[in-house]
Image (cartoon, rainbow over all chains, first blue to last red; front, side, top):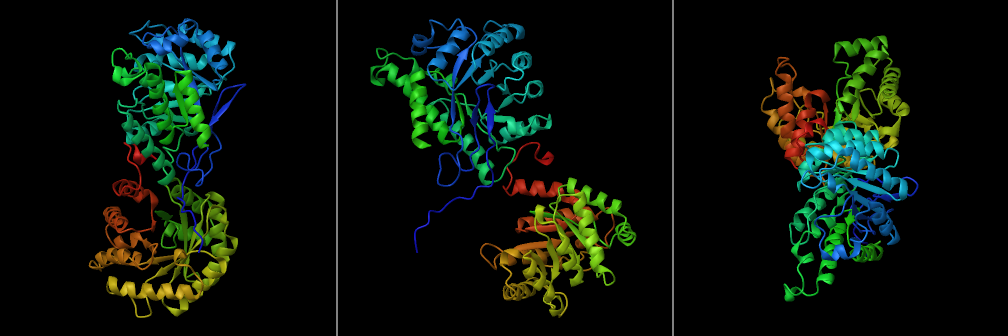
Length: 311
Length: 260
């Protein structure tokens, strides 16, 4: 008798989500666990979105400042730079809206969004500052301004999903549903969002990201459980693409900031910082993320090569 | 677990009248209610149907499938009526189910139909000698039923073993035997044999207000033993089914699990 490769039977297929207007990208569509090509189909590769911010970042460490600081006062310039680097998508984080930052108004950040969508044609993720109340004020206005541009809006959380989901639906956008490192809460939030009438097939799950060495394995494990529930337990509610907001968490760690002089045993900062982001990102691809938000072009290049090697 | 809506039964006065007078609206309405409550299949129980059985079953199957996108469980002792139902059944939403055969040779014709139309069938663990006394007798009959089914070319996967739920009010000791039988039936094959019950017979003859209580708790225990299908009033038991699935780890918990 010939050897037959044992194959797992899966009960579901992750829905395909497309975002962008003239230029579109697609994620999802697979019906097997990550990269197990012999068991299922993977019609779309994971996508990496370059992160930009609406005002000069207050917390970007040296290695990022070197690349972006000469134009980061202008988000349009910043976006154009990312496109020149080969970005397939951009993630605009409206950080200035945070009350502890500049506390900019919904109208002010909406102006920035308008400028970007009128200047560059690229699939766009638009995020608030992760401030529950403020996000629920700015994201509805932003969704309206970007109506018809088929963006990904985020992040809706249990405390503010109603207004954000309603406005994302009105604007025809996809939605990121973020819960805090708990598979049951992720499911609950998806139920609640679906109950508002928001289409389930336009939800992207963010189980809350973390960086290598800083809770990384919690995120990894929650993602894994979500994907296993969706594909192997037939859980339709959790059957959604997942996003990993990698750069935001990685570039806060000491490993991306401490100089060689400070800690010689850690080696060269540039290599270390880039690898910290790349390794974190690659690992989340293994646990099921289809969409990554990243910051350093070199790290992005490494992860892209990794994806191309595997798919 | 496969949930089969029991309400379209000749036992119900309202349904019986609707069948006699061919009142589509009543049948449709009850089918839709069960579909909305979460039924995966609708039972059409037309009884012995000695007169006009074929025409009645045809009418039932088409009337129900005009109303809901579900397969039908064909419940009658009249094999001609079963065949008539099989012929008009729309398999787009799944195969129909034959309800039922047993070890009574007069009922073997149902095996023939299941084989001919390649559809699953319920096999009651009763023989010619009357009702089984305990779980072990049920298993003995089940083994013979599996053999019989195999003779007709029916795969174990297409056979639903029914341990025969009896009335708690008159045969209290049988409830435990049924639970044990479900467990033992499963062990007769790998993968396990499928099992089914007509749940509400448990509370037949009991006061109306306690019937759902008996049914729901018994179903929970049956699910624990690994029951694969149940003929039930879906609205009555759906909460129990969802809850037991969560407790057994078959569904991932979320606070709103009852709402999905």
